[in-house]
Length: 82
Image (cartoon, rainbow, N blue to C red; front, side, top):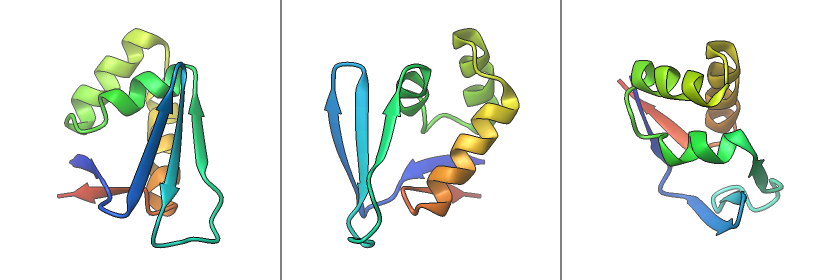
């Protein structure tokens, strides 16, 4: 499975932090990514198995990766492509 950023996601980056805003859901608060999750965001469009292998190298478990991807998908910030 591949993941991509939703076309309604606005991304604001600063050193060590990323704010994600779903423009289609204006009342939804922004998702703030920090720490290792910023590294995960940078490799998001890789195949999920590659993503999980890559994130293991930076210290995130498969469960943490899946939880984050599901949370971002629930917020409408990323979309799974089969």
